[in-house]
Length: 502
Ligand SMILES: Cc1ncc(C[n+]2csc(CCOP(=O)(O)OP(=O)(O)O)c2C)c(N)n1
Ligand SMILES: [Mg+2]
Image (tube, rainbow, N blue to C red; front, side, top):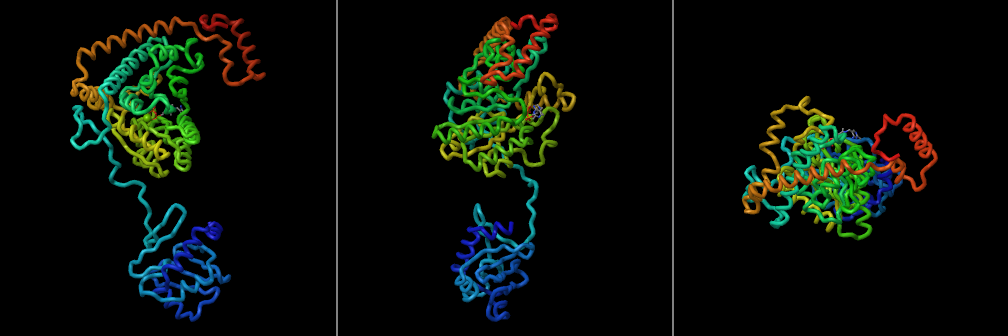
């Protein structure tokens, strides 16, 4: 550290500037100088007791050493001999201070990389938390009315209705796929119930050139972009039309066509990818950004922190969208972090950040719209923390009533349901009706059941696909694994699915 200070051109510039501009030697310094007589190399100039600094002309007379009393290390910097003279040679005003010492409440500052830092004599530790929590931006009240002073991005009728329709489609899709898993037709599923506004309204505020790096609870973004129910079903059933060729668990959707990277369930691994892709958009001069979604649990991963810091320093157009839904499987946020959620972490990394009501579609839409504009126009990352609740179990492998109360779930499912809240607003505008609702729900149910039947009947990808798409040329160890697998299947044909072409 001391070495760094010695080389710091900033500190040197500061000292030179201070010495030539402020002049000097007010009270404390001057009286010490008088006591010492003429200053020479090695002299220490002690300030009065209320001053936390000592100055010393170092053995090399061109070096001025400064040390705050509370520390042991001297910060050294080379200054002009003449500046030393200016610094200690002239008297201007009593009590003015020389820039490093203070009398009578004078200000002092250190010109440190990143900006000026005030010196204070008090030893104040920053509190780990404050009693007041960061506010939450919202637009709609529980009756679907906009608050009188709320500022939000205007929505066309067409977009608002499509948003509502997609939120309902997502609900129907979750219900039917969940049932399909319970019937043993697919191996796994995970719902987005309670987070429909986050899914659809955020997608609506983006453009198709913006690249999406999802966690796994954001299929509504794909839905908005035009992924069909058949495409969802093909992936969940892992048939030969699945873009991942059946090599992933259900819900690991991805689409090249729709700029949606394939779901990566190792938590938070998508976050640095979004930053790298945003950097490439910036280098190519594209008018687009990336967005990455992650949960409250994801913010505990190292990848989250590395990504935020990298994005801030490289000034890239990425939106970090944290779905703070209260739980990471069975871990509540109170055991996840001691900070005021994720929003303060964005600020800690130097990122513009906002907390919003994730169950308010208009707030989500407006915040993402503004974030996108800022990210692209100013080439900077933005963090959005959306407060919401995971109403469903974590996945079909979980029973959340084992670790949280049914009252809590019911409260969020009913009183804070984002879909009915948005419906009230859309209906209030005269854009939706009970008849339209019933028709849409019935049609979606039928379309989905057809898609599921079709996906189930479609052939599985052939066994050889298992070994493709990673290496340009399949390496020897994988060739050997394929041979072994084929031999085992031949010997035990009844233990392997008959519908997979070998
Ligand atoms: C690196 C890693 N560790 C652990 C897991 C197991 N795991 C799967 S989901 C999950 C919880 C994630 O919670 P959160 O990020 O809040 O997202 P949510 O499920 O609430 O949407 C965990 C721990 C994992 N997939 N990857
Ligand atoms: Mg969570």
